[in-house]
Length: 358
Ligand SMILES: [Zn+2]
Image (cartoon, rainbow, N blue to C red):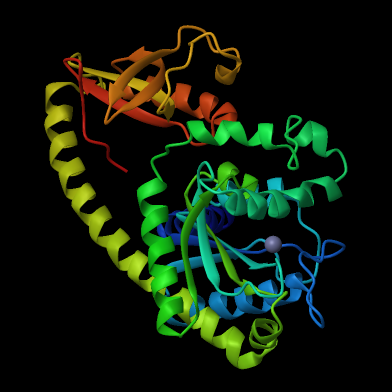
C-alpha cells in the first residue's frame, strides 16, 4: 500500500470513529409502535391497534427528529411488520438508549375511555394486571416463545410475581416522563386515567427509563373515531412530544450536574490512585430491591452464590460481588446484566452507601 492510500485509510478510520463517538454521545430515544404484521393488537369497529400505534409513533419520531438535532431517534418498526417483544427491547439495549417509549391503544368494555401511561412494576389493581397480560400475550404469537422468555407465561398471574422485586434505577425517570405524558394529554383534553404500574415484558427487558402509553380505548366508539383521525393522532403525538421535551430538559440539567461532580471527584481520585482503585470504596452489583425479605438461596437469584443484602428506605437491596476496583465491577456488571438487565453498580464508602451517579 502506498503512503497516499495509507493516509486515506487512516482518515477513513478516524472519521468512522468520530461519527461513532458523536452518535454515542447523542441522547437516544427508541420509539416502539406496539404490535404489527400478523399481530393486530386490540380491534375496534373499524380500526386496528397496530395502525394507530404506528401512525402516532411515526408522527412523534418526526417531531423529535425535525426539532432536535442532538437526539438520535430509533424505531422498533416503521412499517406494518411483526417484531417480537424481545427484539424491541434488544434494539433499545443495542443502541444504548436513554429512553424507551412504547405506544399502544387500549381495549375493554365500550364504556371505558381515556389515556394511561404505564411504568414497570407490580400491578396494584386487577385492571392494570389485565392490560399487562393482554399486551404481553403477543409473546404467544412468537415461535419458540417458551425458550425465549424462559417459560414466562403471559396469561398466568403467577408469572407476574417477579415484578414485585423490581425497584430499579430508572424508576424515578420513568415516573417523571409518565406523569409529564399524562399532564400533556390532559392539556389536549383527553381523559386522564393516571400513571400506573404493571409488569410489561418490553419494559422489563429494556435497560433504560421506559414507559408504555395507552393512547385511548379503541373499543369506545367516540374514542376510536378520535384515535383514527389525523387530528387525533397529531394531538396525541404533540402531547407525547411536549412531555419528551420536558424530560430531555431535565435529563440534560441532571447530566451536567453529574458530569461536574464526577469530574472533580474522579480528578481527585486519579491523583490519589492512578489505577482506579480506592481502598475505601467498595463496589457491588445491586440485582434488585424488594419490600419483602427473600432467602439468598432463592431461585430468584438465578444460581448466583453469595448474594448479600443491605437495607435502605424500607427495602431489602440484594447485591452480588465486592471489589474496590471500578474496572472490575464494571466487568462483573456486564456479565450480570444478561441475567438481571436492570441491575446497577452501587458504591459503599466505609460501609456507607454512596449517592448514585449516572
Ligand atoms: Zn397493545
